[in-house]
Image (cartoon, rainbow, N blue to C red):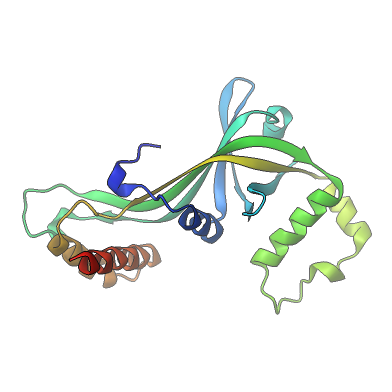
Length: 207
């Protein structure tokens, strides 16, 4: 990923947080000599540095993915930035966004390890008060359903994080853009505004 220094997320914990908060990712690999991608949730194990998920068995991406270096892309908030929000008309519009790229090799998993990853996924996304409780599900039913998927894990070898939030612009311009975004009803735009306000606070502390 192209990352100018002023956009780079250097703190590994920040990248982990981005992954955990935006865990529905795009996984890229090569299949039969061509680029191939699947959209799927990836569950993070920070301590062991693994990502876990599964393919539907008819999805042929799993057939030749083992030992490949794959790329998982996690997309955080993003939005259009209009140059009309600046203090001058000698500017062009842009797009602000936060994203992480994770590289690693895939291992196919099954048995207890795969079932544990499925349980972790349900626990992450299901409401604690939901009537759907993993520990109450019929074991034979789960085993039957598991036959239709292929579990895998990715050993994290490298992570890149990018937060393009107008850091290279003046404080005044950051304030103008943030003010516009805060008025939006879009969740993406309001989240970008919140991230930009954090940058403004850091700039103020430095001064």
